[in-house]
Image (cartoon, rainbow, N blue to C red; front, side, top):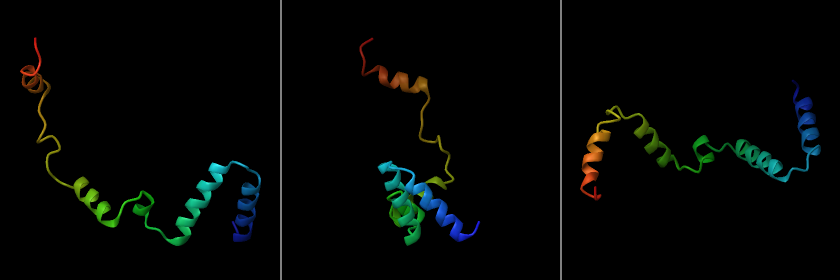
Length: 83
């Protein structure tokens, strides 16, 4: 679709609504896209935070290595409750 036609359709859509929250979302999304904001910044994460989360996700350790079973939990909690 030609750029001129895309712009016309966008203008028509914007002019056809008075939904303020929707218009604010469109404005914020487009400002960020046009300014070249990094994807992780859209989620309010710094580059360091994003990299930390990414490294945690990519860890190769057993995900359940520090967990205990239900029976072990139940027996451990038993001393805290009157039976």
